Image (cartoon, rainbow, N blue to C red; front, side, top):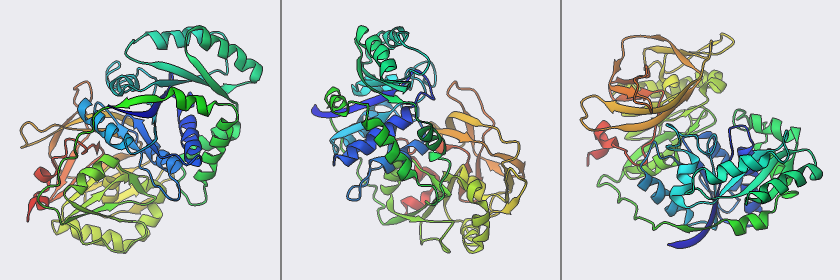
Length: 447
């Protein structure tokens, strides 16, 4: 075991301020010149992008990683955490939803991950409408599961220093160390709402993160937080050796429209060959590649520009129609369809590879973990997550090649489509552990 520093930011529920505090702390540690490794509990790919932005400096670029015990085994999560945390001075892990909220009861929850990795938990409590009543709330979280170490608390949306004194006393009385508070700040709240959704160059996300850090630094005891954050890292397992087919090239779409990518997926893909990123928005041609990966993202926010880049649309359509191996997920699926209709009714042409149309009209949230059982692949189970507001408004005759179930093992109507060597779905699959890519795309195994 190796001594290190790390902690998990958790809360009783979503909306308590975990993301604001996580981003601000990451930026504060970065300002101090520390090497930081950010993680996110659960399947969220947006927060990990923001984490990387907050933790990176001009000299050192850090990727945010997902720790998810539904999409991967506990051993994989331990190994992933240990490998990446060992290269940093401190790891900051943002929890998901409430501390004990999991796919099924507390399975896959932030609490499970904290106990699995031996992480002290720092609670974020919305103190705006309470005082000493914080005591039983903290008492319950501290004692509900003895394997979870609730070590400290930061109170958010506090009215004044006098208000904080009541909350501080409540925490001390139940044995949870108070580490400070954040006064109400409407500018920070508005900024947080738009951090992930607004990807335009005009929106200064770095400035918002800096403002979060400045806000936190005034009233949170950062030095004491570092002292509380002592941990022992699990033993690091060696990375699985590269396959014998190194020399292959995987072209990955990454730009403002396509950027929902699990870092562990890129690590898995890199075992098959070289990763080359390209932009469906700005580039005119695909890189020469053996596999094209069209990641999820916000194609609806860039539909006009994607449609205007007719050269790239035609190039991708030609690649797919000529049998080029392609994996497309969520936003990538939308891009490969015939058209994309926006909420205002404007319809834009897409690549035309899949005989379907997608729309943002009558938008409704589809959300949840998914189990994928590909046909003609005995014993293979893939795991992933589905999160989108768009829907398929028209679908032609397209082969579906898998049975899809949710975390409770109930069938869901989501499809895994296949047209030639193009496979597409609304599901974001996690390839970090159960990659099986060579089974789906034999081109990767050819010498």
